[in-house]
Length: 141
Image 1: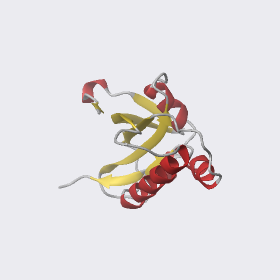
Image 2: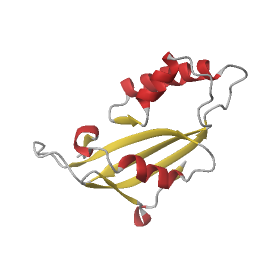
Image 3: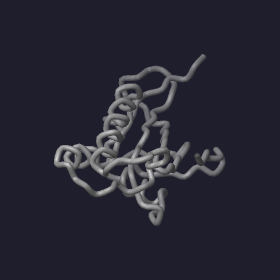
């Protein structure tokens, strides 16, 4: 996991909002697999993704509809091997919130080892609507 030094945060444009990258994790998505098929791998990943989305609000999974369609269509091509997770925060808060805090969004995608995860993140988040996807996190007193 890459933790960002607060003095050296990378900023990303997410729709009209400027957000800072707080952490980025790149992991081998097939680590621990002893056997299986690309279709079975997709089904297991989808189950894990959906479980994580239910447990943790404000997660955006890039190309989730395509992953679901591929699993339904029994696609027998392996997903890119790297699973990447990024956590972004912004000082932007919804107008109807009177508390002090920030907003946060987690983003997940799959990529090859040759791809730059920071550049890929910029491409993924640029068109997103931060206001509808990010969650408000109040400051603790």
